[in-house]
Length: 438
Image (cartoon, rainbow, N blue to C red):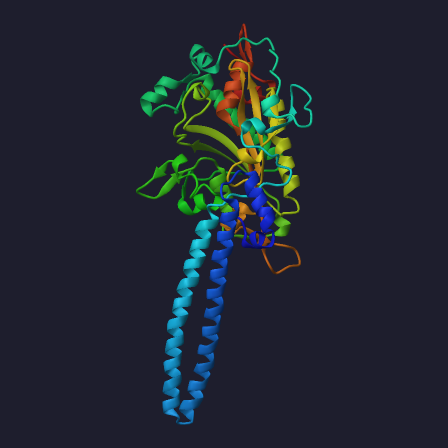
């Protein structure tokens, strides 16, 4: 959530940022936040004054009693009683204002960095890099040229999965419902190989592996911004008031909730493999067929906690890491800098990685890598103490998929078809134990 310091000291910048994100009523929302904070501060001022008066009267009462001036002492006690009643009223007003302010700030998204392009939808995202061709400044998804054919057979992964007995979508429907596939034989082995490959690569890059719970409490969902914004997208265990995680970002980042770190320990670099659960309510059509959009899927997440001064470098290192994975898997890819209107609620800047499926004739998103600036840290109360300073400051939090498995599996199956079977990328062979799916 945005800090009051940012809102009050850089009001115009905040409003411009919210407008870039196409947030309706940006000025009204910020004006309301400032007004609530003003009411809170006024109540605080009156409360402080009441408490000071009480302290003064308390000192007088003792002296009056010693002097035998009982009537004056009783009058002072009566004034103290009135002040205590007023103090309670001001305390209540202040608490109500604080609660109202926090609730209101939770409805306001993060503001994008200056380098985030203008735009209202996915078509306005900027293509900054591709393995298929050189990108020109200003290239957007909307004006991207058609990708040339590479001569691969154009059989989609859901047909290949059935042909080679790798994934049974119907069996998943029987056991659970649509969006919960069952991986079989070499399909299951391919999943496990990718998980181990991604974790091994993350370890080489200096990430500490975490194995977190896949259910979290409401405080964790609030800390990373899934609540109160995305309740409808998460599976809720109502009896225990727990949520199935949509990504390992939630439990791993919440490790550092209400924690003050030392600057010398930053950046913190964690990775985690988990199952992820998303309701995806309202999703339908050809774009969700097969592995394209699931309710349960495997993903490896990388998470960093860093200082404001170093977080941009951390973000670039994360982007380089994800790009390196796609290169090793020999998949055609492009990198998008998301425009303001297509960014998530919580991110300050985000890059998406997409792989090309010739079989489907479209790009498939496989990773989002985001810097949240202090937005999550403010909700989490995740802070660090700079060297030589006693006052803690808010950290920056970052995360990214490295990688999400479903569309990676789809791309590997579709882009590696040969007359002999499906070829396994060389980097993955040590993890699968086989070079071909026949």
